[in-house]
Length: 263
Ligand code: SIN
Ligand code: FE2
Image (cartoon, rainbow, N blue to C red; front, top):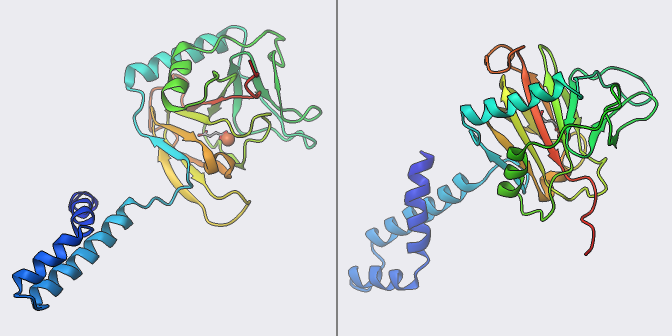
């Protein structure tokens, strides 16, 4: 239905806006407003309305969804890079909440010059080194630098790629990413493995939210208003994909942390 309204509606939206059309219809009816004239007018108004409705999205402005951005080989290559990093200097570790020390339900690692970490005493922050091994984070894979260039117009590269591993029952509470100095730079988020239900609301906590099932290879970009909106993952469809060797879902979140230095 949507496709029909998109095609026909786009045509009608353009056609209907031409003032000459009214004159032609009037002439066809011998200068009188006849039934045909009324029928065509109301059909046009309806099609125009349906077209505009079909173009409306419930997601905030600046929310970009790219389904199946990575094909199977692209997904496997990213998972190989993750496996290499976590077998080496950047093993998954269990992050904890500031103050309470409550463990998050995901385990984490990072790529890039900066990595996002959290613990009871230090809270949410970016660090140049892994909290357990003390090693610098593994280099950002080229495929991640490439997707940033492709999907954002940010002139500087991402500085951090947070690797979240969702295992059975893992979720991510509603939050806004605010630990960056530059909170206006876009965020690019890649899904690999099991599907998950992603939820996004408005710039204030609570209120209406909308959800979207993210599958392996899908990418979401938060820019503009969406960059400041509450979002989270409220359900993991555990076991629906066999792509992650130990099961679950890997999410890669690319962020710019610092303002671009002035030259
Ligand atoms: C996040 O926003 O931190 C993660 C989102 C996701 O896992 O898709
Ligand atoms: Fe986030």
